[in-house]
Length: 100
Image 1 (cartoon, rainbow, N blue to C red):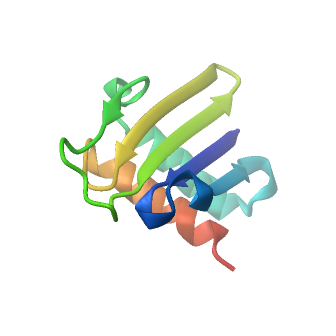
Image 2: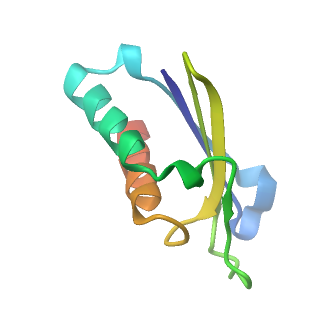
Image 3: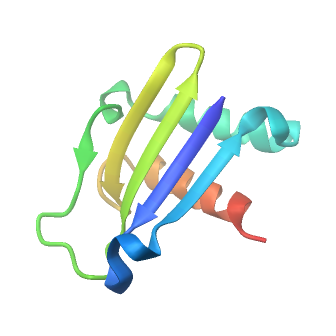
């Protein structure tokens, strides 16, 4: 399964986009299982939905989560702390995995 998180915004706008691209097959089993569990906990209504603040501040980054697996591709767009709480938790986990 491929999990991609694109983070855009802040004062640099699109120029400062951060992309996290994770192939769960290349992760240690424990980390891959944790991501899979996080994804399974997301409500089905999360996918193909948008959870953005009505009046975002410059520091409210837009996150686009894309999951590609055997069942196809699913996407959602959100600000942290908008939408299902599991979404923000998953974004945090992906950021931790991507940090050196």
